[in-house]
Amino acid sequence: MLNGNHSLGQFLQKSKKIVLGMSLATTMGIALPSVSNAQASTASATTMPSAAATAAPTTAATSTAATSTTASAGDDIQKFVAADFAGRQAMLNNWTGTSQSYDKLVELINKDELYRDDAGNVYTLENTDQLYSYPAHTLVSNWPSDLNQVTLNNALRSALTLGQTKAKLKSDDASERLKAVDILADNIATLDKKTVADIYANEKDSTVKAALAQLQARMDLQSGDEMTQIAALKTLASSNSPDVLADIEAMAKQTNHSPELKQALQTTQDKVKSRIKASEWAGHVFSGLSTASILLLAALGLAITYGLLGVINMAHGELIMIGAYTTYVVQSFFKSHLAGYVDWYILAAIPLAFLVSAVIGMIIERVVIRPLYGRQLETLLATFGVSLILMQLVRMIFGAQNVEVSNISWLSGAVALTPSLMLPYNRIAIIGFTIIILLLLVFLLKYTRFGLFVRAVTQNRQMARAVGIRSARVDMLAFGLGSGLAGLAGCALAQVGNVSPDLGQNYIIDAFLVVVVGGVGQIWGAVLAALGLGVSGTVLEIGMGAVIAKIILLVLVVLFIQKRPQGLFALKGRFVE
Image (cartoon, rainbow, N blue to C red; front, side):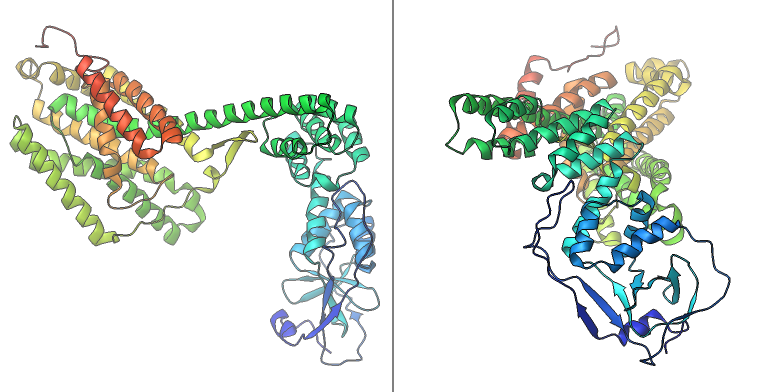
């Protein structure tokens, strides 16, 4: 007799007997998707032999934890366990028990904790080696010799999942009910019209009710009644779901339709296509906005350094790359030392990415750029050399391959505005982050003493020195600020793309274009230029490909600069030559 001291691993290693279940040849026509006979494979139970083959189960009269299920829940699960394959299928497709019992059944099945013996007694396994009777929840000291794990094949597991979906339709949360309707729409072929109609009649939320109306209309398309089909097409005309379009296109391929039905099909198909196209373009524009946000973060720092110092910093892209690698290092530290808080590593990575890039930028300004002020060609070559050095250092430290920066769990997923328009959370966060940084930068430059000094040195360096402003110190701090902004751009890029030693090379040219088009030293010009280049570049890529789109964009920029060399916004005043 095997007792509770045996581990489940030892128990399962001795188990070799497989009991085959029964096949079913009955088609179920019920509210939730049933399992077709063709799919129905054998439900199996793994028999677990004990050391003594003739022993009977006995339960110890020990104190136990309070049971989490009611007597009715226990009865429902006992009925399910006692049923054959056909009975289990019928129960899952049309669960008449309590929602608590269904949730408990799902939990036990998913955790592989539900067992039975040949006498029909039900047990649950807890902590891998503690067997309890169910629903009494009394500890079993001597395990039965004919103990079998209750298992489901793929067909029954699918029915179990759909049963969970049906339970969600009774949820008090409208969003849960809406998710349930979306899941049911993927299994429309096996739904029961009357049940869906009853759910629709009892639904109060307008959004869920509209989704149910679409579901009913898709079912009515298969009705065979022409008037019903035409009415369904009128309802589906407001849809922008690719699945709905697929249903309509499949129906339109049939040749036995009346002229009225053909016209309705064509009209609805055109309307759904146009709605889907509009959603797709909205998604492209959103993608362009997120790209523009990253470009703006990269270009803001360049606008400050180029506008203040007149320095073309070819190492600016590598400062973006350093910000991305700083984010990677912070994430690795959290994984190894603060695993419980790894989802919040970004809160530490943002200031550190700024500080590390800012410090490196100030070192570059002090050591490399300051001795070369006024010599633009030498400065360009020197900063290009610095960019090569930084890339090689990163390759030596982290390797030449990409490193993985995992997305934060609370930034995973997307907002589904429509079935064909998904807005990823991480890109929404990047847009919001860029707006916050932009507002902070405007405040810093417009309303602080440091900002006043930066604007004074930018407009007239000699006059600023004459009134006592230490222009060399302002140069260093402003260069550090611009470099720190580049680091923030790298931190944002790490959330949506690969992190590699040549990361910055992909953005440095676009960042310079933003600065030139926007106007030297003009923040709002950089904002408009980033939006224009980011959105137009993304839209052109969709229609023409990345290479042709880049060529067209560069040609447009050249033409714009020829027409307006000072950019969108030019510096004004007596100090401008």
